[in-house]
Image 1 (cartoon, one colour):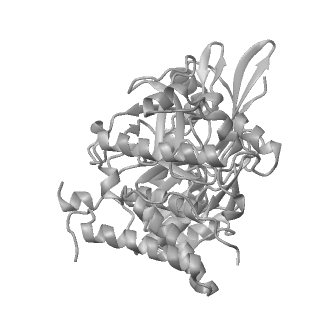
Image 2 (cartoon, rainbow over the protein chains, first blue to last red; image 1 turned 180 degrees about the vertical axis):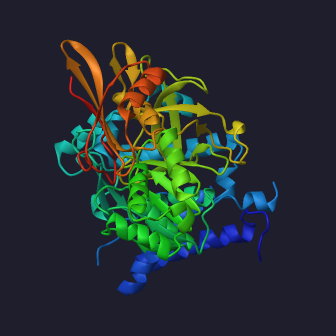
Image 3 (cartoon, each protein chain N blue to C red; image 1 turned 90 degrees about the horizontal axis):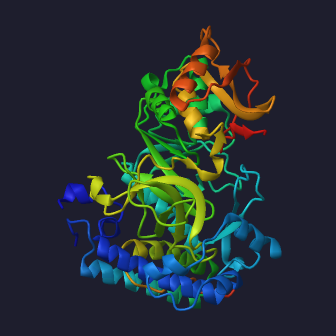
Length: 67
Length: 432
C-alpha cells in the first residue's frame, strides 16, 4: 500500500504508533543485550518520525535500567 | 499540491502545515516542554512563571535567557549544573561551544532521542537542499567536541547517501578526494571552503571544471554575499546556507531551493526583538533572534537571546511551498560583534563583504584600534600567491571608504602570516 500525495495513510500512521509501542515493550522487558540496544536505538529513530508527522506521542525518554 | 512538489519535503505534513495549525502544534509542544523543564530542571523551575496560557502569554512573561545565565548555571556544579531536565547519564553524546567569543564553553549532552531528533533536523535541511539517497558526500570537518557537522554526517547516512569521512585529512588530500571520488556534496564552513579552493588552485586543479560537486553546504559561520559568490563560482556548484547552535543541539534554519533560509518552525519558536527596547519588530525589520527549542529533552532552551541579527520575512513571500517563515539573507551578523567607529556601525560581515570582492585576497584580518586618540580600522590582507598585487591596498581602502564610509589603513602581508581557520574564523579584533 502506498500513498502518492506524500502524506501518511491512516494505516501507515497506525503502524508507526504500533511500532513505537512494540519497541518500547521490547526495550523494557527483553534481557538480550543486543536486542534491547537495538530496540532502544530504534525507539529514538521512530520518535523522530512521529514528531515530523505531528503525531501526539509520549514525549520523553524512559529511564532505562542499566543492565 | 501535486506529487512532484510534495516530494521536495522531508516531512510534508509539518513543512506545509497551515499557519494556524502550526501555531497550535507549537503551543502543544511548548506546554509539554515547559512542564518537563519545570519538573526536571532546578534552573528552569526557578525561571518559568506559573500558568503560562498561550504563545502570546509566553512571549510576554517568560524571561529572556542569556548565555551568561547558562554558563552561570553550569558553573554551579560542572559540567551541567542545574540545567538538565533529564538525567545526564542518559546522554549518549557530549559537545561544547567553540569558545571563539572568549566565553567559557557551554557544555551540553544529547540523549539518544535528542540525537535522533537533531539528525532529523539536518535531514529536513539536506532533503530541502535537493540532496538524495545515493549521492557521495564529503564532510570536511575536524570531528571534535564542537557539534558542527556531526549531525550532518549522521543525517547523510540516515538518508542513504555515501559518506567519505575526512576528519584528519589535510586540504590537499581532501581536494584530491573531491576529484578522484567524484564527490557530489561538500560540507564545510565558508572559511574552509575558501581554503580548499586556494589549495586546489595551488595544485593546478579547477574544481568547477575537474570536480563533480552538485551542492556545497556551508554552515557554522555567517557568510557575506561576496564569499558566497566566490565559493559558488570556485566549485561550480550552488551553495546552501544552514545555521545551527550548540545551545539548541542542532540546526534551526536552512535555505530552500528558492533561496529562502527557512526557520524549522515545527521545532522552534523564533522571535525577533529590537535590541534597544526588547519589543518585537515587524516583518522586514532588523532585530535579534530570540529562540525557543521544542524538540530536545536533556538541555532545554527557552527564549534564548542569540545575538544573531536577522530580518524575518513571511512564509508567503517564498514560493517553495513551505509554510515556515524565513530570514532574509540568513544570519546577517551578530549584535555583539557590531562596533561603532567614529559613529559608523561596523560588523565583521560588512568588512568581509567588501574585502572578498577582490579575488587577489586569500586571507584577511580586521583590527579596530585607537591611534593618537582616534578610533580607526586596520585591515591586514594576505594575497594569493601568484597574483599581481600592485595597488591592491589602495583599491581595498577606496572600496571600504565607498561602501562603509570609513577610510581604513590597509597592510599587505606575506604568505602564511595570518592565522588559518577550519571551523569558526576569528578575523575581527577590537584592541581599543
